[in-house]
Image (cartoon, rainbow, N blue to C red):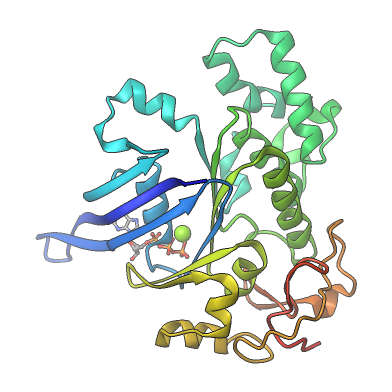
Length: 309
Ligand SMILES: Nc1ncnc2c1ncn2[C@@H]1O[C@H](COP(=O)(O)OP(=O)(O)OP(=O)(O)O)[C@@H](O)[C@H]1O
Ligand SMILES: [Mg+2]
């Protein structure tokens, strides 16, 4: 089908000043290249501070790369004037970790979802129809559109943020730690929702997490980032079966049950988002850092952990 996203030698230097006041550059992303196929589900995993969000923002040209190229559907984003870039940006959206700061507390859900549609001149009737359809898609009743963000739980808010990301009919979604702020019991629901939406709307995903187990569950390809560089990139099962890089090996070794032990057992995370046995299906290593004790959607992906429960 061909790549939707091609990153070529992306470098991003953050400019700042050291404690002595001297200008300093910090290379947060260092010569990163990869492609994401149309309809692909590409995982980016790495520890906090390794440059994942910086890379995502560079790919979307929210904060353009210092050097290197991003091709979206074959078009070099760096070659576009701002008006054209804006048109391209509608085709790609990002969902961040924190649904609290992603939604304006003074705006109703309906108004938040309307904003982009108003900008492109869609009339009220069409907007209402579209917003109701999107809220329905993420499991929020359209009747709740008149409410404000504080009236929703964190999980519901993240569903609303996902619906908002879909208002402009994007082809590409960057999901930057989309479930890290959610309760363990809600994480699987949102992950499964994202997988369902991807199928339904034929989307391409860049899924970012520091949890290799979540990435393995979600993604068909995994890139491992370490100190600004992609140190290894493989189809998910290959990465687990045969990790070559030392850092990847360390990440895999942190999974309960041992690294890369593909047993083929089914999972506790069911398609409807319920967990067979929540207490043992996932566990929290530290705040916001959750690993599943088993991974894989029921039946169609292997249990990568060796089934420790
Ligand atoms: N605007 C900025 N100016 C200066 N340095 C920055 C800026 N944004 C990020 N950094 C630094 O760049 C490095 C990479 O940060 P980034 O947020 O991309 O990491 P991350 O992998 O997304 O981490 P996390 O998992 O915690 O979200 C960090 O050392 C961070 O402190
Ligand atoms: Mg980040």
